Length: 367
Ligand SMILES: [Zn+2]
Image 1 (cartoon, rainbow, N blue to C red):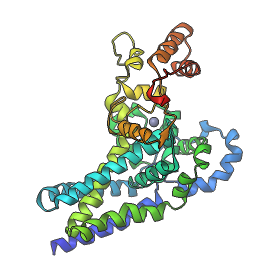
Image 2 (image 1 turned 90 degrees about the horizontal axis):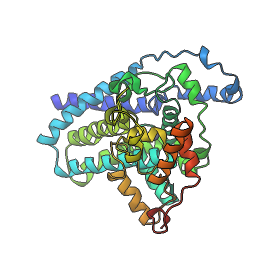
Image 3 (image 1 turned 90 degrees about the vertical axis):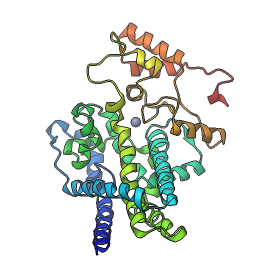
Image 4 (image 1 turned 135 degrees about the horizontal axis):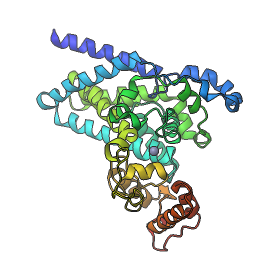
């Protein structure tokens, strides 16, 4: 009887979550329909929009609140099942799916599509597009648009993940609120022309819900039942809820990591200057927000190490990834000296110095 109740609750949540995802393809993209109906007008009147008159209030998003409460509570029960009921193969399957989804978010949506830190062959882009579908957080196009808004409006009212409100807000509370009218209008000004030319991204955007239903829900949930006879409970709770919970947090850290691993407001390292961190890149999040086109900038507190960067190097060795973009220490030194001399923003000086960057003949990126 208890199992039946749990199952009914679970299934109803899946339906709710699926409907939720249909309505809200990406965090903060909850006005999608409204946004698109406004899009034509925005395109022509963008230059005339008076941003100062738009509301900056973010209303609560109650379906999102309910959805995330359910996901987290049910994931706690899933952890119990990991130790009591689930088969080892289901646990391994959970980890593999989480890894692929995380790769789709980090080296796919973030480093390839949002920041163009390297070029990928069609085969690699298809693979990363399928991995990104496993994140269940909306299409690549929608995610990238919001991430670019985050960078463009970093630490202002236009930033949906404004770290000035603290890590809890940047990581989680922001997901419980709709975007303000001000943020929606700013989002429509983000240049997405490069992604609009990418047929794989546009294919995923167009058929997202079919891909989501197949790749994110049906095939993963079916595998433990069909291939190694695990229970329905294990399949739904581990591969359904717990996986969703893990992947969501991994993806959310891409925007909130700056609060977790970065310097706090007013903090300096070393005590007299913050510029040195650019050279040794120990505080990657700040470096990432100054220069976001470095393929080595990890999402989880690393630079030039970690799983995602290693995968990019492997794909480069296989000839699937090319034109990796990074900064040589010498280029950074020149940019920093120029910034100190002229008082120009460091990011402008980096762009200038990059024009003259030369790589050694035996350099990894030249191979
Ligand atoms: Zn970024």
